[in-house]
Image (cartoon, rainbow, N blue to C red; front, side, top):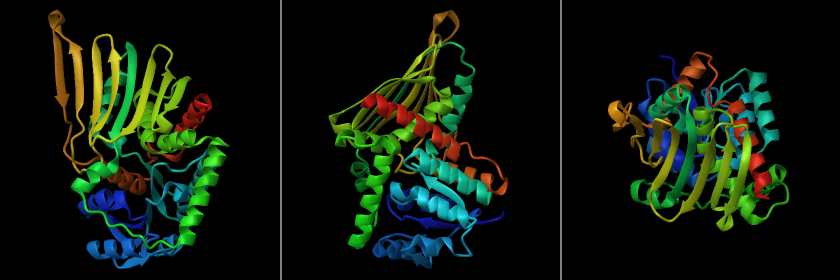
Length: 356
């Protein structure tokens, strides 16, 4: 098989816990040839741990390498679009962690850069590559009697689980000027997206871009793009978000929150008149936990039947890398494309307008 040589920009939690393990598992298809992180401590330690010789603290040096065919963008959110555009302009394919960008202008610029270079850009919505979710989409597509839907994601802070299950190298050596520039860039991008906003709304928008983007994106694939947003609000300083999406014949309720209980209470559920379909997600930073599909339906004689299916073994991060490989080598359009992510930003814009 043709190997894709990968350079990684951003060597923090998701890279150390998930992506490097997935790429190692798929060593017949991928080879990690270069690393970049703003922390010299992190990039040197991760490079030693994984025997990756090329290590940089400036992403432009990594992108310029001849032995980098594709770039994983896993840096702080406010740099995702900039790095993706630079990689595209250098002729590199990109797998970019969500959010792909922070506002609609950046989305347009990413799409333009991808089109100029004729490369693959895939957004890392790993939940949408879970076999249980793919199967649920097929089942829901055939349901003509949907009455209600729920998107629920109330989780404990990641650190509560990561500290017990993973070793993560962290660096405190990022130069102060780099940190200050990052904070200024983030603030400017937030202001461009939502204007002059109170701290709670700003935090809520950050959660929409981060945690909630998984849920809204999956909702769209499962149910389609809603007709509009009926209601949206944030509470408790922006840590809890509720919303209602208009699907004409039914409403989808969205519930997002972050607490201090170390667990993931995360599911999508669709209610029909005779069948209920539920996809239950597990903690993403613990590898290879199953994503079950649960179906409740009425059988003969009015008997209620319940079944739980785990369509396959494997990790959702690995599955998204497999899809990325196929998309690059077969020149296929990713289902989690920049245009697809743009739809999430449009819904976030409408939600924020109602939150005000």
